Image 1 (spheres, rainbow, N blue to C red):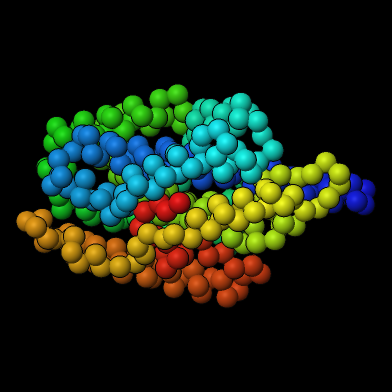
Image 2 (cartoon, rainbow, N blue to C red):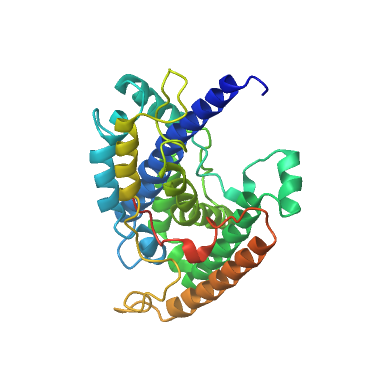
Length: 313
C-alpha cells in the first residue's frame, strides 16, 4: 500500500491468481471431479436403486454424470477452455490439479472446519455470513438427513449401506482430510450431509462467477506483464464463454419433486420428510434475506432459494 500504480498492479495480479485457483481447485476439481463424482459413483456401484440412501442422494446427483463428463471433456484436457484462458502451461495446470487433490479438505463437515478466532468472533456477531449462513444451512441439511435415516430404519444400516460407507471413505485416501471409517450414526449423517452441502451450497458459492467476470477489469485468468489493469482480449472472451456455460441450471433445490418421492413403491414417509426439509429451507431463506437487510454487503450464496438441487457446470 502506498506504492501507487505498483500496488494497483499487485492487487490485480492477486485477483487473477485467486480466480484461477478457486475455479480450478474449489469449483472444477473439488466440487465436480471429487465430491459430486464420488457421491454419484459410490451410490450407483454400492447401492440398489430402491435403497433408502441411494434414494436420499438421487435428487442431489441429478444429471451429475452428464455435467461432469462435459466438464471433463471441455475444461480438463490440454488446449481446453481452462488451459487456453489461463497463463499456465499444461504441465503447471496439471500440477495445480494434482495439488488440489492432495490439499482437499472438502469432505470434512462444514461445521467442523477450523477457522481463526477472529473469524469465529465475526461469524458469531453476524459479520462473516459465509460461515454463519453456511453453518445454519448445514444444520438444516443434517436434520433432514437424520430424519430420513431414522425413518428408513434397519434398511439404511444393511450390508449395502456398509459397503457404500466403506467405498466412500476409501475414495478420500491421500487427501488432506480423509473420512473416518464411518462406523457411527453421527459420522454417517455428517458424511451424507456434507455431500449434499457441497453440491448445493458450496457449489453455488464457488461456481457463481458472473459478478467477477463481466468486465476485463474485474477478475479473470490472466494478468499482463505491462502494468495493465485489465486482462487480454483472448482470455476475457474465453472467460465469458466459460461464465456463460455456468448459467445452465439444474432444478431448484426448493421444489416438491412430486414424481419421485413416495412414488413407484417407495415409502410414503419420503414425502413427509422432504416436505419438512422444504419448510426448513424456506425458513432459512427468510432468515438470510432478513439478515441481509442489515448487512453492509448482501451475501446470497447460502440462501436456499438461490440453490440448485445438484451441480451444474
